[in-house]
Image (cartoon, rainbow over all chains, first blue to last red; front, side, top):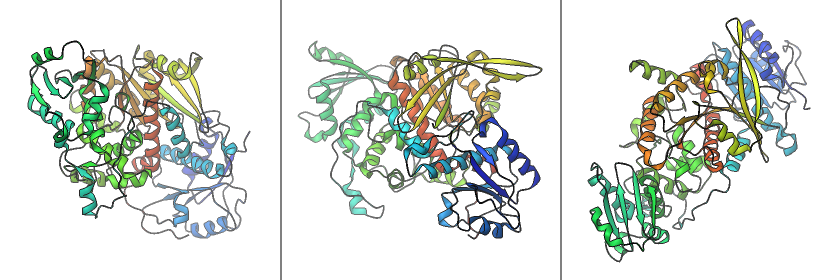
Length: 389
Length: 193
């Protein structure tokens, strides 16, 4: 069994001290051992982590005593107002604001344990284990990524052809122009226009293509594809001007021409547009989408029923939670921009970005009220109450 | 071993046990937890499955019983659970009401990442999924909402992958601390190393 994580503290007021002791005795924090308070002259040499109140008049002195000759794994700083942290401490510190809510302290302790665990496990994988009898702790971001990757498993991946291009900067207007494309020059742009023109109709319509047909039923959101899959995918990647014959919208009676010899399969309109946009993109982005503007996804794409684009889940997670530019997404995930541009093309094809220039989204995010929430229970309740539920 | 407990909730027949079986096989273990309810304790029977993930730890999936959903708000705890998967039966006419009910129940643990799976939806019932997605947008939810077959390992895996990545992003944001403490100002001055 691994030694408990030892935590020293100083400068905290009585209610927080009592709360710390109560939490350390709870099942959820059984892997935590709370050491006695650091005195004015002495300090806990053996502590792994530290909790202190920065408003304590002796805080700076005690902090210097504590850290002398020691490497601090993680620290909780209880503060009232803004705190400037030295760079080397930023990744190791959790700042909690006064007045301190018990739930916030519990969250801070969990975070502290995770920082400690991640820090302590770096030398070898085998040290990552910890004794957890209740609740959970010691789960690093690295483990989350590994577990997510493992769960992704061996889903069938679509091979994409990417245009060769260097990484771009937002100020490189020539590079941006080269990396963009016009959706209307491709099949998915044509299909989107056709859906806009015929989407309100309750009846189906047919798009005749070289080598087959696509029957679209906007009311159900379904399509029937009457052509070889490989041929459809080639058409998605080609400019319309390179088609043997241009696509034409017809009535459903034209399907009689298809006869019985063409293969048929059903799909959702969403999955067709997603795949067609990815194929058209080649790692580029639609010219109509200003990728230098920060945006946020309106919702996650339904990844369980869409073609498996590279990094789609990671990009979705980030872009659904934060308002960012495509460049920022690529930087944050440390992936090639072309993956983000392709994703942005497919997301735009499904109307997953808000209309407009993204400034409204940025304003909301800057307010940090809704922008960083994955789930807002308060807002749900407000909504329900407003609707008399 | 790093442990990641994920609570799976949803109405009866929504596919909670099937989802655990899809990932963990048939080795489900039934556990009982007693919750205080007035002067009496209420036994909550959980179906659980464990999934070992190489070099990452283990995933504990805990299916919470639908008939105890009124106690869910007291059972769920950010200290004990890493995230929540909500399964909704897409065939159910009352799917949106069920969604609202469960969202209310788990609102006490709003800091927990959430992923929603809509089950039993064949392709022809897309409208129901759209309605749920619209409701979520109205609610200000930005969590994953996927159509899944809870019996399919791949589908359940994608939903859990999305949940873990949401946790990853939330962890980086420190969103919980911001929300709980009302701390919104950037760190700017005051502490010297």
